Every structure is written in structure tokens, then in C-alpha cells.
Image (cartoon, rainbow over all chains, first blue to last red; front, side):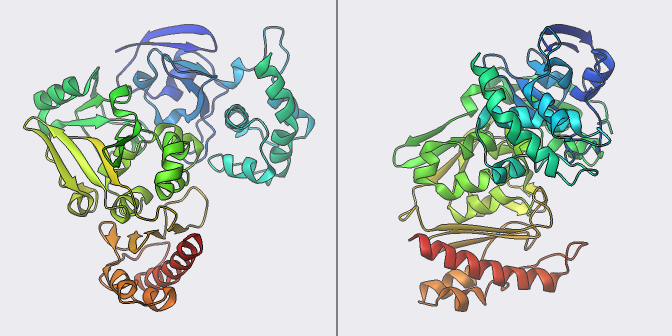
Length: 166
Length: 273
């Protein structure tokens, strides 16, 4: 079927098999390969992106793109980690905080972790440490032990909130 | 992992979805959030030939007060349930448990109707529907019918819905004491299915993952009605159950967990009263 998805502000249209998963559309049709396929079974969250349906408010909600059909995202807006930086290349506050707080080691989980954190801060601009930990329960990291990731999300909260209201 | 080939159709109304299902018969499945169905299809445990997408139907997404009960559209996401102010005051058990399903990403996509029709005995919401004496409203070619939650879950992944029937609404009577609720779930990791879970509303007690379907803990409820305290009533928690044995625990372990968790849940609901 013909699928049209606005990915990071750019319209991407393609004829794809009905069974195409959103993550494969992003990686192989839109050629955006930051979104990783980890477990491929709705557990690890490495494929997390933001998805906003037609007529929905806000910046989109976190979804696991290995468990969404491209067809389900037809007509939607999708944001991947490649779409977070602003036009001048300035990193999103969550990206900057992951850098500053050393919130990654191998980096495989990082795109999904960052998108889950952006979605959390959209819903809850000033989360407690406990709330950050529970909001990241769908994202697995096998390197860091999560401490620096949680620290990065907490550190990003004020600037992320400022950016949204700007 | 990629699902086996199928034909995707998007319905623009419930009527159209029912018409499409009537055309394709037993080869078709309804797709809402897809968070039960798509994982099964990727494992090729489900191989429908046609998917009818009902995920965008606004007419299935609502939580409202309706003639003395609470009506929830089957397409309402777990996240929307967890954030509903009406549920927080009238059915706090449902709001709380919806916020415990899976993880935030799953809750953004998964729907209450999808979870109920999937009928996994390890899922949280089917037991909540039982504990709250819900009525499930199904629409099909022959019209609409009401199915009590106690008649809905037939066996493992099997409900009494007929082919071509669509669950459209879940109706909950308002509990006499909404605040007397509790939910206990034992998992190894936050996002796991319950090894055993318990939902309590007033004197109603329902068990997660203690048999082929979600179950009411009838013996516990009878003991409570006869005046037993939480601990004495909880001693009956495994009666009438048929828990399975798997990598997470054998049947005896699950029976022990059921007694412990029912005891905790009854004590917790008592402190809220």
C-alpha cells in the first residue's frame, strides 16, 4: 500500500508491503538508521520514536516502532532522534544532557532512551528520580546501570521545558 | 521478525469495520493498538489474512458517565485510562492498573478492548474487568449484545465473541465504595507479565495468571462475606484455581503467591476504606 509519513518534518511517501513495520520504513525507506532494532519484541525500547496522529496535540508520544505497522503510521508525524536537534545543529537539551552526564557507553540503546526521555518530559516537565526510573522501564541498557541516564534526564528537565514553551 | 503477509484495511467507522469483517469472515482480525496482536503475528503464532484497522476510530475512544455507570470505549488506550480524572474518582482500581500495564510506550498504543479480547490470563485488565463486574458490549452483524465479564473469558486466548463481532464498549457499575480497592502484581522486572496478580474491589477478588482464564477467587469472597479477616480469607486464595507451571514458577509456588498477594491486597484495600 501507499504510505505517507511525515518524518522529522519531511514527507516520506512510498509503496510498501502491508506488513512493513514502522522501524523498517524509517531505516530502509526514509534511510534514517539511528533508530535501532534491538529485541524486536516490544521489550528493549531501542526502536522508540515519537508518533503523533492526525489532529493530535503536542509533540507526539513514545512508541516502539518494531510493534507499529508503517500502515498504522500513514498520515502521522514521526520524530526520530535525527529530528531532535534544531535547524542550526544545536542538540536537544536531552541529547546535550546525555553527553554532559555521560548517559551512554556503547550507545545502542541511546536513540530509544533519548526519545523515551523526551516523551516523558513532554508529559511530566519536572519528574522526580523515581518517576524517571519508572518512565524508562520500557528501555533496556546493558552497559550503564542506568544511573547516568537517570541523572541526564533529571538534568535536562528545566531546559527541555524551556524549549517547549519557546 | 516480520509478520506473514496479510492485507491491511483501514475502517473509517465501526459500521464499516463490521462490514469489512463480514466480507472476510474468520480470516480477518481487528487491529487496534496492535500490542497483543502484532507480537503474536511476528512470531507467526497468529496468521490472519486480513487486518481491519480500527485504531483511529474516535467513536471507540471515550470514558464517560452514562446512566449511573461508567462507559469506556474499547479503543481507549491504557495511557488515557490512567490519566482519566473520571476514573480516578469513580474507578480508581481501573485507572491504577491501566497505569501498570507494560511500559509507557505500550500504554500509549495498547487499548483496553485489545487487552480484553486477547484474553491472556497473565494480563492485568481482564482480572480487573472481573473484579469490577464489568459488562462487555459487542457489536456484530446481528446487532449489539451485552456479555457479563464472567461469561466472556472462555479459555486461554479464547473469548465468547463470535467471528465478525467487535468489542465496542466496557460498562462498569459504580462500586459502592470506590476507595476500597487494591492491586498486587508480582513480577521479576517492571515490564513483565504478572507471575501472579490480584485485583480487589470491595468484597470482589480476581486473580491474574492462576488458570486458563482470569478467575474470581470465590472461596476468598465467601470467607470475607462470612466475616473472615484478610489473612484468614486469603488462606482460600488457591481454591478452585489451576495455575500452570513454567520457567517463572511451578503451580505450588503460584498458589503460595496467590495466598500472600490476596492477603496483602485485602489489607491494603481495608486501609483505604
